[in-house]
Image 1 (cartoon, one colour):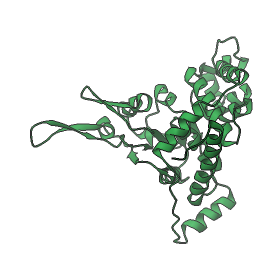
Image 2 (cartoon, one colour):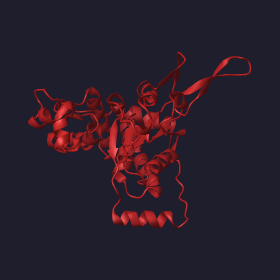
Image 3 (tube, one colour):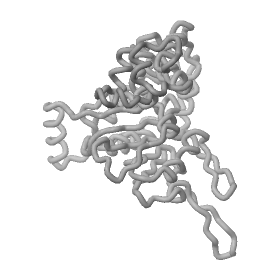
Image 4 (cartoon, rainbow, N blue to C red):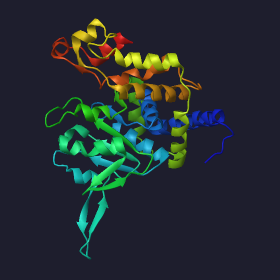
Length: 321
């Protein structure tokens, strides 16, 4: 762990480490710079990230590559309709000496890839709820603490809705960001095809370990925020709530429920991390705006009228912004 003289020097160090990390991940992942940045913003902000995209956009590969660049324990859980909560948390078994012994499940890692999270019933999805929020797992009345740092990076396929279980609002709210992946450009796709069909294996070097990530997470919490930026973030969230004095006509007409206080918290910590990644020592309103879409898009619930008119959550958020 590098010893810095002061916080300003430590922030310079974090900016340097972020650039290194981005460069290593980009060796394997072609394009998708904004997505890589969003996932890293979540990791350094102590948040969890939900990646939504059609199959074949390298969602799983991206998460695996990020785990490779960080010296952390990586666990993958493939969500299926028959997956049980104990398949995630672990279970007690009777050993040879007739005593119950707890066998830890895959949730006991640092980076947890929850692949196709909407393929499993709510009972199993909720096994992740306690882990994501409390960083604990309770099995047979005994509480087990999860090792820090702990991130859940979940993937979801937006097309095939048959045999899927939509994530409950409480579960969605646990994710700091909801990031939508799009198709690569033609130039990027040519590069992807070239690099994946030539038989050349690219190796990612380790950039950061667990202790350094925890150090930088605490450092980012100390980043100062101006009162006007704080007010802007809180007002932005208030504007998504129908019936609030700040709500616009569109919000009152098309939204059933707005974002809760957790959205304000994530907007502020996300803006801090975004500012530091941009080489600044304090966030401004622009930093809040840059993280607003992934923070808010899964926290506002549209009504039947918005569905009938084909309005997207993004359309409403962009109007508010």
